[in-house]
Amino acid sequence: MKSWFRHPFARAMAALALVLLLGFIFNADGAFFKWGTHSDMYRAISVYGILACGMTMVIIIGGIDLGVGSILGLSAVLFSLLAIRQGWPPWMAIPATLMAGAVCGLAAGGLIARFRVQPFIATLAMMVFARGLAKWISGGQKISTVIQKANGDFMNVPVPAVFDQLGAKILHGNLAVVTVIFLISIMVCWIILTKLRWGRFMYAIGGNEEAARLSGIPVWAMKLLAYGLSGLFCAVAGICQAAQELQGDPEAGVSYELTAIAIVVIGGTSLAGGRGGIGLTLLGALTIGYLEKILSINAVGEAARLMLTGVIIVGAVLFQRMRK
Amino acid sequence: MMQSVLSTMVKAAAVLAVAGMLQPVSAESANPAKKWTIGMSQCNLGEPWRVQMNADVKKAAEAHPELHVIFKDAQNDTLKQRAHVEEFVAANVDLIIISPKEAQPLTPPVVAAMHAGIPVIVLDRRVVGDKYTCFIGADNKKIGQAAGRWIVQKLGGKGTIVELKGLMTSTPGQDRNSGFREGIKGSDLKVIFDVDMKWLEPNARKEMESALSRFSDISLVYAHNDPGAHGAWLAAKAAGREKNILFVGIDALPQEGQAYVKQGILTASFEYPTGGREAIENGLKILNGEKIEKEIVLPSRVFTAETVDKGGEWLK
Image 1 (cartoon, rainbow over the protein chains, first blue to last red):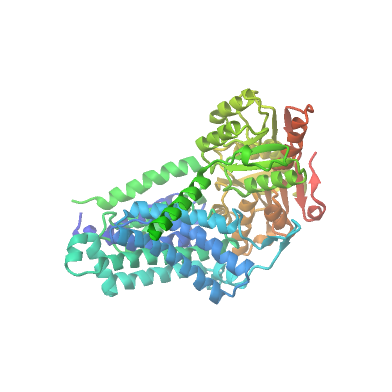
Image 2 (image 1 turned 90 degrees about the horizontal axis):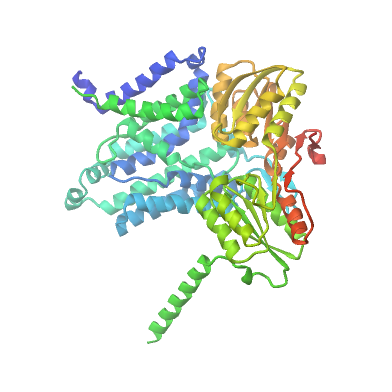
């Protein structure tokens, strides 16, 4: 094995190439060679990818965030309530939803940073709590443009323009707006992790928290930052989800945290913390996205799909680990 | 001194509040003006269809001032639901309505309730054996067949179908699939793409995108639930092909399927009735000592653009 292969980026590329190779072989009568197939996949993976952006920082700092799927659901419901039911303009509804997501992340981060609750426990609690809150504020029903009147009848209100704008495709229908938002999220994380001091601090804390503390790094503040940003990205993802579904589903995002973690890990970011990067997460998102897409265009059954996904994830990770 | 008294009071209040939250609602605490108390055990209020079921039960019960209904939601947890039934028996309710999560593990508590002399109405999903007072449910297979026959007629017996299946490891998914395949038998309809979308709209959209990129000619999408059909429509709309494809779903909840038909998104939605109203009606008969059928299969309706405002059309 050549030395370049030791670089995590090259290994993540190799895993992606492996999955792409499967696509070339099982191309479903040429469907895999159409640009539309790829553009659809980028759209479908974007919401997971946005979650994975926040997850990357949390994992680099040595933590884990199990609450992302639930905060996504809560944000989708809240955004729909504000924009559809309350008629708030987007410039109010979007910041309010983002703030709610960030507060959820900060709450979990506060438990972890200040009260030394283990990240697994604190974010598990947030996962349950945020899901409950989403169900409570929505009354257990999807928040759509169909509204029940006092007499029990249903009426239909128009979809707010912001939903159509965020759910649309640009460049002559070739690129989804949510994909652009995903790429911006990647850029933001890239700047934080590589261009700002915060990024160095996060790697240091994930590598050796005690050493980081002794060298004067504000550990608790950085943890708050990481979890708060993760919550913020969940809200971004929740808004994208609601815009694409034209409704806020209190069940949205169930088990998305697992996909987000899988994206980060398959990219090559270490679950132990301190090692990895956002570029790897982008490659991880593409790998998982293409895997799902290839199984989908070939109409593989659910049971086989689950087993194959498990096998291929393990295969890709082992492939990454290969060393001379 | 004052402070410690205050803090004791606060603590006592907190303990009481917590105890109040934890205590199961008992029949004793029910309104004494009500003649009968009904315990309604729902397996999972996470599904809109089941929320609708509870709403139907509530609405039907409100028409009868002598009824008091206690609702419990097991949150998709079999053991929790088992405990709920046992709590109803302990509280000595007059009737239990249960929509069980699964048959085998929930049979013993139902049998125990029957032994305690409490009549039990089983809704939607079955329990094992015949130790219950009445089963009320719809037939997914018949609804699938009806959808198949309706689609054959609508397309003039010819065309290409994308089938978005609920989940082939679940009975409703299997029945809605096999019924549909029987319904289209003998016609020239071809199912060109069929996949599981796990009843979820985002998944349905992803799968439909794959179908759209593979096939340039799709006549109709048959989805095992309305959110699935809606997700497929969203995919087709993004590809600019929604006008050339018909979309058919199942469930026909007023705020989902029926609304989608009204909006012109779905061509048809087939009702999968919740049985909530029927449970209360038959429950009243049981409580009044009348005799009722042990097995009640609910009739279903189809909603199309022409019939949706008139309350749909009953299927034969």
